[in-house]
Image 1 (tube, helix red, strand yellow):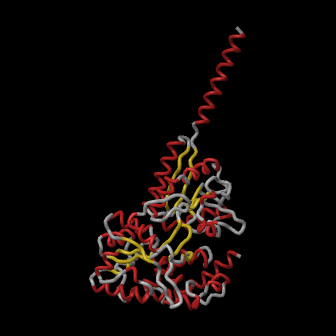
Image 2 (cartoon, rainbow, N blue to C red; image 1 turned 180 degrees about the vertical axis):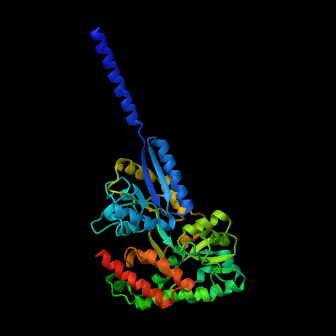
Image 3 (spheres, rainbow, N blue to C red; image 1 turned 90 degrees about the horizontal axis):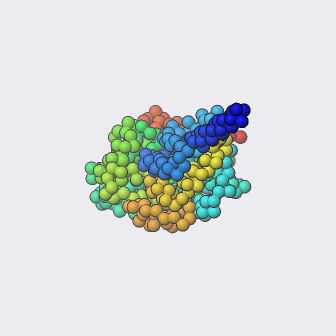
Length: 415
């Protein structure tokens, strides 16, 4: 009887152990991936996440895009150390986020990063904190049909005077020269970055790079950038509902051949094509402001994913990045963004943008103005100043003064 009892007790114990093991193996790990991506790119990430989950049933990847609220959200989460498992670093993997991220130099895809991307994503010690998915090469998005209908060759636009003449011809033809949208003031800030590059860093005779980086920049020079916004507004070259328009309404106007230019990254070209796949959309370089300057493209990180060094799910997060690095997934996200891949040996199909990428291969690429020359936190200030200058809340000079005050405040806080 005792032997029977011991046998039954042993069997029950083994059963409990087996059931406990089954429960443990079935425990689901949830990874949080936070983005600031437009809808088509967010959808691509979600597709990648679903395919990953099919291979790893015990891992779930929660993908969210915070859009224009991304930076304030991340600042709050960094301050409280309540970080997502993974997030997109949008150009700041080294300067802003590296202290929070796990170095990834030991990962199998690390040697595949294209050479042109390495200076952007590496710190002084050669550490890399992100998987770069695509290589940003931004210009001015253009509807070639609208521009050509006004008798203008979009490829012959070199200077700001060229653009202003084109704007007038397009307006005279009954179309909208430039689209911006006040519901998301990043629209104004992006223009200011492009103009800032052209006016302040891309010309040997007007090179303020050193002064911007060492804190001695004369912010009266930035009046030139703000003035361009005012000039376009006062000439009637921007959509009339600029202060209330959304990105969707601007994209629809371009898709319907009613609007010519958007000063933005090429992801917005993809958003336009979502409304009309047959629209003749492309991009041209950012204008040159001085005789000794060339037209440029704007480059840096776009889609680049890092892992919080404090995540309790490091193994699973590394597994997801390795999956994301597979060619078919790099292609999926980079095509949704409208950019070439950042890993070697991968070719994607950029559709109507392909010819322009080939056309502008030899054009110099300048870094994003705020990421390279301004302290962390200035992006949100540029948005508010751009909106204020556009609405008339700030004069040209007042807008530069607000930028100057915040520039010195943020530099001091970073020291």
